[in-house]
Amino acid sequence: MKSKDIILSIAFFSQTGIGLLGNSFLISCFIFVFLSGHRMRSIDAIITQLALVNGLVFLSKGIPQTMAALGLKNFLDEIGCKIIFYLHRVARDLSLSLTCLLSGFQAISISPNNSNWARLKSRAPTYLIPSSLFCWTFHLLFCIYIPLGVKGPRQTRNISETQDQGYCSHNIPSGFHASLVVTFLSFSDVVYLGLMASASGYMVFLLYRHHKQVQQIHITCLSPKAFPEMKATQTILLLVSTFISSYLLNCILAVYMSGIKSPLWLTHTSAFLGSCYPAVSPYVLISSDSQVPRYLNALCGRKTPHFDPDNR
Image 1 (cartoon, rainbow, N blue to C red):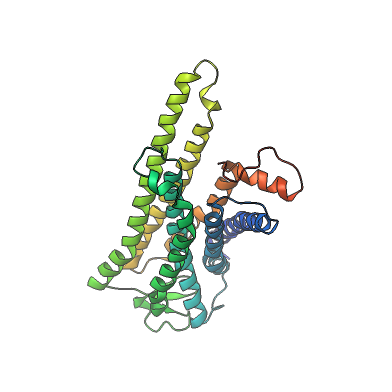
Image 2: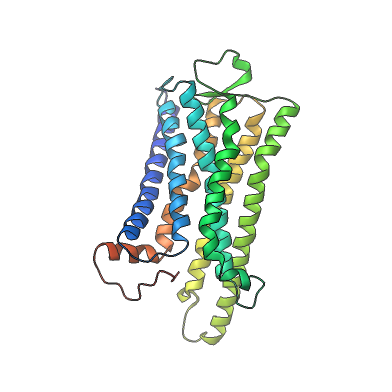
C-alpha cells in the first residue's frame, strides 16, 4: 500500500470508530432510560433518531470507504452498491432535516411567552414525533432515484462516463442534465441550512438578550463565565458552525464533482468532510447536555437531585 492510502485508511477508520462509538452511546443511553421507566424530554426522541441516522452514515459510507482506502476492491455487487448509496443518501438527508427540526423546536421552546411563537410553544412537543415521521417518509421516498445511476465496480462499461468511488461507481451527468441534477439536489439542502441558521441565530439573540438582563441584576455577584446561558450559546454556535461548515464544504465538492470525473482523492475528501458532523455531534451533545449525566446516574441507581426531564 502507498503511504497516502495508509493515511486515508487510518483517517476513515478513526472517524468511523469515533462516530459509531459516540452515536451508539447516545442511542443506548436513551433506550435504557426509556425502558427503565424514567420520564424523558420531548427532544430526546429526536436526538435518538439523529444519533441513529448519523450511525447509519458511517455504516453506509464510512466502512465501505475505509475498506476501499485499504485497497479492497469488488467487495460489493451492483445490488449492494445501490443499497449502500441509497441508505447513505437517506441517512445524510435525515441528519440534515432532523437537525433542522431540533433547532426549530429549541428556538420555539425558549421563545418569550409574549412572542409570536407563544401559541405554538405549548403545542410544539406534540408535533415532534409526527414531524420526524414525515421526515423519514419523505426522504425514504425522495431518494428512490439514487440507485438508478449507481453501478457495481464490475459493471462500468464506459469509464469516461462513470465516477469511481473506490468500491462502486455512478453515472456522471453532463450538460443541462448536470445543471438540473445539481439544482435538484442542492435545493433542499439550502432550505434546511437556511432554516437551521435562522433558528440558531434567533436562539443566540434570545440567550444574549437574557444574559444582558441577568448581568445587569447580578453584575457584582457573578462573572460572565458563570452564566449558564453563555454555555448554551456556545453549544448552539458550536453545533451550527460544525454542521454548516462541514456540509457546505461537502456540498461545494459534491456540486463540483457532479458534472466531471474527479480524482479518487477528491472523492475520499468529500466523503470525509460529509462524515465530520455525524462524528462530532454526539460528543457535543454529551458534553453540553446536562441531562445525559443525570440519565447515566439514574441508570446506575444513583439518586440525583432535581431529576427533571424538562430541565435543559
